[in-house]
Image 1 (cartoon, rainbow, N blue to C red):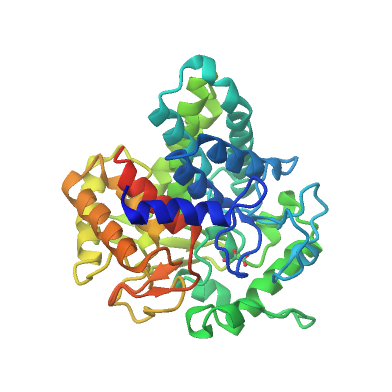
Image 2: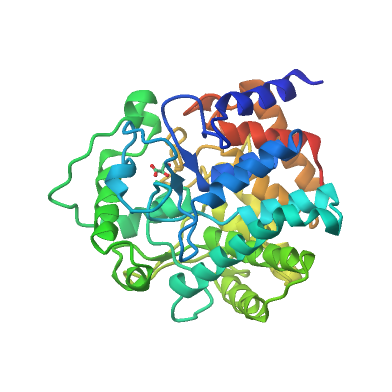
Length: 420
Ligand code: DGY
């Protein structure tokens, strides 16, 4: 067996706690994160189905009654995180944050089930998981698009998963800092501060969080009252794909939902409107401030993952993506390196992230095999050289952020062991 494959498996197992896996073994992220966990479950599915199943089971154990799956689950009452379970104080059975993250789990579960070619008699195992995912996606439609515009909002940059992306600079510049802020960061003591979000970012993250808490995280009012409300292309693309994959999963357990099918059409139609094929430009919407956001971010290309039916849009997206990365040795910078806000080393403001590469690869493998293969090989080469870092420079390939990063290991395994 290839030694990096062995190391990847060991990395995941070392990061594993009781039935869930930390994003890394350093002290940086001492809990279970939503989309990390989904990618990790996919990684395990390549060599240990039980661990994969348990990872998903534990993540879903934190689902709120209303359907939301939180972005963090604090299974252990560790106060060494900012903001920790006490600061969130959501009053749930499993301590958690009060916001969510991209619902990638639906797409991961579909892949796991399709690849393993489970017989209907084995479906029982995943039956309740599928129903919980359905409830979660319905929650998004109900509370994050109450006006039924066909587009889902995020109410905190942490919900996107790409926390300090320049995508959020403008809406974040409008956030008034809570005068009673009282928190101490630890992340910038564990990782070089030059690779982490700024103090002003954290002041605003915590201010938004405090405001959500003041409203008791009540989803019925947050859409209208949150200080941050953005329609993001990346998030909506992952959401659209999740709906399509949920549809597959429901068929698999002999269920149907016409409500979801209708929303898929609406979501797809409106997502396409955020892309101008002629100009090859993307528009994210800042609903709170009634403004548009035009930043060249790799997450805009998640549209390829959502398998739009419109072939000419797909073609234009691929052309635009080739242009986006034409000067890079290592794919893909999270922000175009020719943009003025690009930063080679700072978290989501430029570095390469393995989950983005995986999402783009999945989107391209049935649309441009040759390009998809280039991405696969480029990613494998980078990880074999620098091992499982949290993120990497698109210029030099150097590894940054946490070491032994779980999703880099999990998705490396998926890239190398699975081409489907
Ligand atoms: C947080 O601190 O909640 C973020 O998700 C870390 O990226």
